Image (tube, rainbow, N blue to C red):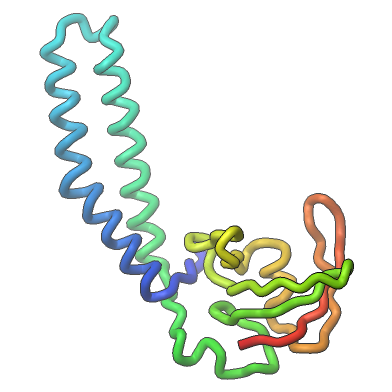
Length: 156
């Protein structure tokens, strides 16, 4: 499994979610299943089916988090901006778009991406395109809707 880039806060947030799912959610779902099984015919019991689906979702999410955290590479924010000449994961990049507007994004791992908050994934077309480029570079980004150009104004 490839490395998952996470900030220290993102790593802690995902660890807390995993702990909650293991210690609290599993018990809640088990209780629902037990109560639903006491409710009569399992074949016609919608509550039982719903509880089984919730159990499957919870166990799937636990497995997903365990794998993600095992492969996590913590972004050391104190060294993430060590080379202002090359964009890396953890950097904040100011770009100018083709229409002259500017935007600022922080490049994070896919698990923490939140474009509305200015956090883009290093695996997204824009994030992938910016990596290893430097201020002043004009880059063509290949996106699902077509290609576009951006200019890197600065990185911090």
